[in-house]
Image (cartoon, rainbow, N blue to C red):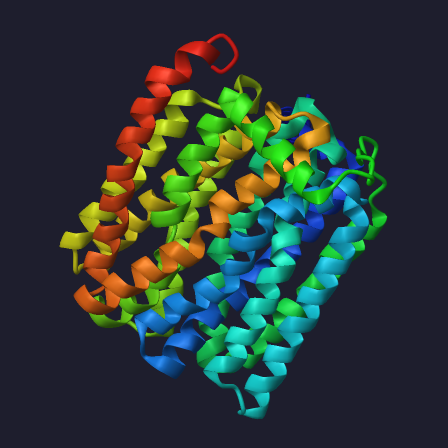
Length: 418
């Protein structure tokens, strides 16, 4: 057997989700679109900080963008369970493409102001409230339950490849051509994912009857999460880590400027290095998907994220900071992917949209609280203390959560969750 055949066989064995044509369409589109997303995300953070010179106002951007998810995620879950996910995604992706072009035009005209970015961020937040849980709950319709963990790992991998390459591209483009081109590139990148979604023909599609009342459906979904101890354990952990720890984007532009004395290129390289750690974690989990999500990895990684953020209090070295941020990226993705896989594997199709909306609420809906907290302490005490505050507060809240899970949950589900 040729070496090429061996490599191909090993690749297929490690990533069986790619055998599914529908998932390949979706994943390929994501490869392009997520690259554009990270180019814009990097440029947007730098643009806002350049316009305002305020960590607090930079944090406020996250508040505006993610408040719709905080307020409406649970209702979005009902909507997702009732409607065709493919059609929903075509609409949401098209709207976000238009928003990217609008920002690009305003920057190119030289008329961009802080409030413009806030308004667009708010609209994008409303769209993402539906788009994010729809994408998450769409994956099982493309691959079935057998390859869910592998598909989630692959999806996380491409997200983190984009997280590495996107900031590097953004840094180069911002220095050479300005930020307008970054937003324009993101707008163009949406075409790939829209085409991919159009080509998909789901084989596991599931929609609920639309006759039920919205509030009753929300209540029913929350009861389902509460009654399933495995899902509840994962969601509680994500609420804590998602609220207080996952706010590095707010701190890094300030940290790169004030502590490390670096410009746009140095800032984008830090994001890329953090993405390298994230990618390694995603690939590791994807290749061991047959073993299922690990309880020790889920809870251990949440603690390690906190500890590495706390250590960032004491560093002013670019090299050491890069290594610590790579570790933060690794354990953050290891934690988030484990949570996502655990929830997907233990959720009934009838409740998937509502459960994933709870997951999105825990991951991104609490960002307004976390961004305000992070922006405020970073502005008052500096970016080193911003990292410390995120890690320390997360650790404090995770201790009672882990104790609660150990005492009241884990013994009851030991036979189901390895």
